[in-house]
Length: 104
Image 1 (cartoon, one colour):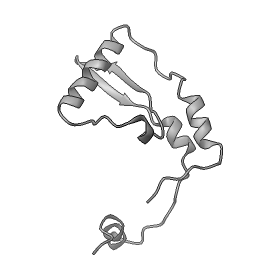
Image 2: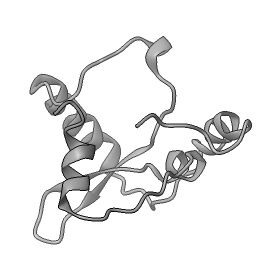
Image 3: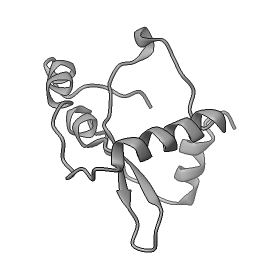
């Protein structure tokens, strides 16, 4: 399933709205975010790609957990609001198998 924009302006709207911050930032958060991202790069959870590969940037936030530690939040609200949603009906479990394993 390919991702498609809702409107012709969606790509531009996504770029403009990216600068808005939805979460209240903690003073420690930027250094914690950098540490989390560095760990993910070292553990190969993330890979660096050239800027030409990037189609949309999603804000990343670090918020404190109640029991200590930090949780990384990837905010896809802006991207999701601009993507076209495809709806389909499932008639049974065989439909799920066909969608997830189309080559069988």
